[in-house]
Image (tube, rainbow, N blue to C red; front, top):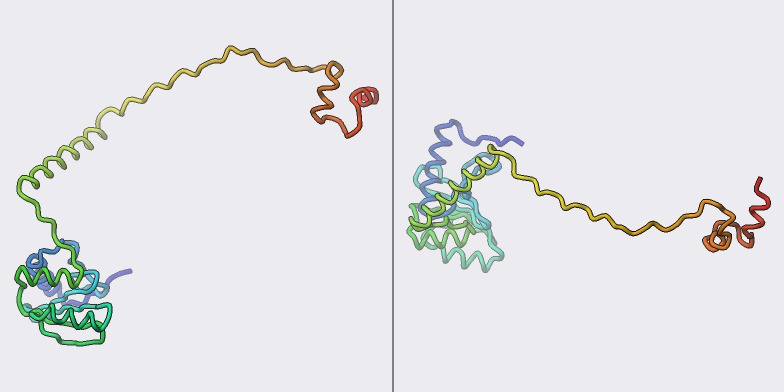
Length: 197
């Protein structure tokens, strides 16, 4: 399914994306939160809402969906630094006029259900980069080098037991065959042998 493009030009789409990236950095949100919606507009998506640009290059519009009317009332109080533009029963839209502070960013992430970006100390980051480089190198060398040695199979043990004797003459063991159910009921082996051509 192809996405429709809501922008008049590529420059307009890129300006929208740049504005959203600035908000994403201010929120401290992970990069995957920024994506295109079903209409092709850039938005920051969370579990409970989305953020779009306001269209003027300076503001953003948040849509928030809540569990109930009471939850929406408390959410509006938590987002008191925004202006409510649409007030529904259990959802609504709010306008954010400037990039949020660290405290405001934490509230927005929590209300919209946006995942926070993982922040690593410089030594942790260096350790992870080194580990990933080693892993990639091992994968490259493993696929380009000689194949891994095959394990040698264990030799099969040969049993020295003698096989059980089998009988090919039907007259030698009539009682054995009658016990095994070879004949019809009530028919004896000797009667069957007497009628055989």
